[in-house]
Image (tube, rainbow, N blue to C red):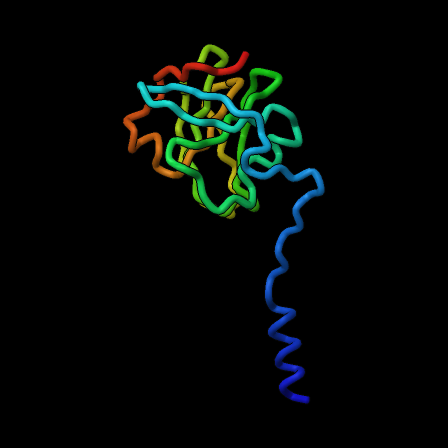
Length: 148
């Protein structure tokens, strides 16, 4: 009986895995676009609808080299991000309507901290953590190939 009690306690203490929504998209199911910044091509999945933006890169375990997710918003505003249910650390670049990168921030996995830009914009792109600095990409540079 004691073993059963210990077993029950251990099972109850384990966190439940988050449940994925019914309309959850897997890698390859998002529209794709090729972007260029500082001469480097990026294969970006596009999140342009509210459900796609809310899902983002949740539940992904990795990103390939030069792969990321481009977020496109309907309005130019201060769009903040968080990392709930996001298993990999990411870097985010916030981008104006004309393609200028305004901010680059590092985001830790599985956190609910808000990451907000210093200027309003229409786009943001998430890449593997450290990708922008490793490729010499800084605020003020132009992202090319953005869908309008």
